[in-house]
Structures are given as structure tokens and as C-alpha cells.
Image 1 (cartoon, rainbow, N blue to C red):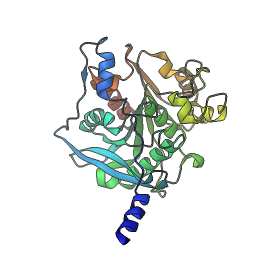
Image 2: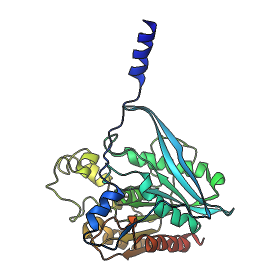
Image 3: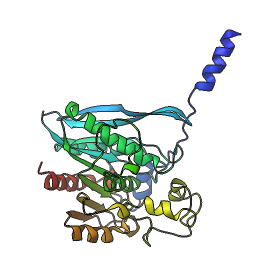
Length: 319
């Protein structure tokens, strides 16, 4: 009887499995595009000889979520040569509902080999928590990075963030809300700053309100509608709040945009660049004129992507 009661109690306390959307993978993206680009090759997880790796490190633990206590993890890739290096927080894409940090690993490894400490971040997707939970997760990851700067040879004054697709929107929002208390959350290492010194956006939403981005006939099951908790008609203030462009100001940091040939993924970008130019803040744009959104996952585009990012960080950090 005691065993039965104990078993039932433990069963009640066991965390509920988080629902997962496994549709956004390199394999599926390859199948989607190979018929149009027969020479593409998927980038592989392959550790360079001059790079150390530390995988699945816990950067924060979320308490009492609907799925129980929840660890969030990072993968860190750092140059083996001792020194102080810039860091790049890397945020994966997947429409805020799918994907995982492994998608960023091949690009992270290439950048680490060039002299950047790269941190691939896990964050809560919409099946688990809607906006702004992912923003709070990533802010916590930035603070964790500063808290562990000495351990990984990071210069805490040279921390950048990059993101791909939905991750690009989150990277922009994280960087452009630096210093905004209401956007910090309370998830770990609160004694450290989440300030970002440079942003890299790979085909990520700049402005949910821009005409090419804002489709007023969005269905209720569209990822952005689900993530933002309603349609534009239902939650216009949230659609604006989650748009990075509205947080830009004269104290914002430099931004690199790397675009595909799909205009809707960089709607609002020209307006943001114009604002930054007026403030005298450096921006840089590169475009792969191809109808392939997830270019960073494939050869022959991953290497020039890594070069663009590295060259940009050299310019803004003088590394």
C-alpha cells in the first residue's frame, strides 16, 4: 500500500512531456529545395581542430512551469588558443514553433574557428510558452554568457547576437531592447547585463506591421498568430511590441542583415536602416539573390555567410 501511494505521488510530480514540432529540420529543408538547387549540400556538425566544445550546458532553470521544472541549455564553441574573444549568441529559426539549437551548430563551429566564441541557445517554443517567454530566455542566456566570460575566454564588452528567420526576429528584439527593464524577465544571473553590442539578422522579421509582413487574412493556426496570442485585429499592441523596429533608437548597436531573395523576410528593413543612418549607426547588408530561405544550412552559402559575419564583427569590435 505504501509503495502504491509513493508511486502515485511520484507519478503526479513527474514533469509532463513538452509537445514538439519536428517539421523544421535540415533533412526536410533539403528535400524542399534540392529539386530547385540540385548542387546544394547540407552543412555538417564537424568540430574544427582549433575549437573546443561544451554541449548541453544549463544556462537557466525555469521553476514550476506547466511542464515541471525546466532546464534550458546552450552549446558553446570556443577557440582553443587562449585569449579574450568576442562572443556571438546564436538563435535558431523554425517559425517560433519548431527547430532546435543544433541547427546553428555548423555555422557556430565555422565562426569559432575564426576566433569567435559561439553560443547556440535553446529557448521555449510556442507549444510551451508564447511571446515574450523566448525573449526572456535569450536575455537570460546573454547574462549567463557574461557570468561565464572568464571560463570561455569571452570579452564581456564584445557580445553580439545572431538569429535565423524567427531567430532573427528574436535576435533583433533582444538587441534593440537592451536596457529596457520590462523586457528583461527574471530568469537567472540577474546581476549581469544583457546588453548587446552588435546584431546579425539572417532573413528575420524586422517589422510585423510592414505591409509585406502583415497579412491581415492570417489563419488562427499561423505560427505568428499563435505565438503572439492572436491576430493583428485581436492583439495589435502585441504585434507592434514584438516588432524590433519600434525599439530602435539613437543608442542602438550596429546591425548586419543577410538576406535571401524572398522580400517578405526583410520587410521593414529599409526603414530601419534609414533610421540607423540618421543616427549615425553602422549597418551592413548582404543578399543571396536566391529563392531559398534557409541558406545558412547549406553549401555553398554557409561559408560566405560565416565570412560576412566574421568580417562585420571585425569592423565593429576591432577584433
